[in-house]
Length: 58
Image 1 (cartoon, helix red, strand yellow):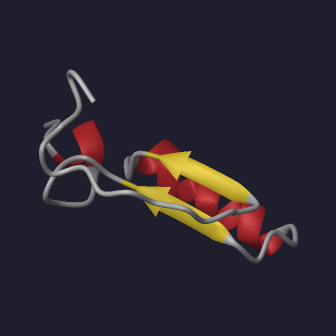
Image 2 (cartoon, one colour; image 1 turned 30 degrees about the horizontal axis):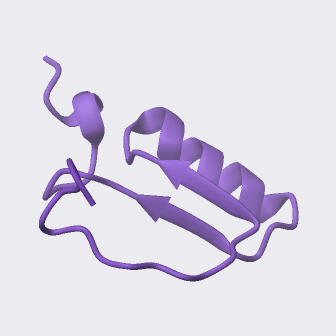
């Protein structure tokens, strides 16, 4: 597919909640959704480390 990242992989799976990003908001959202009953929560991150911009801010 044109413009698709070469590292992208096919993914065929259903989840209750998909969280994009591992910053404070993303991780908080994932935990809150899990605690409220969503047992299939998937968190994805484009960077090679967890934390998003929260990890790089002073």
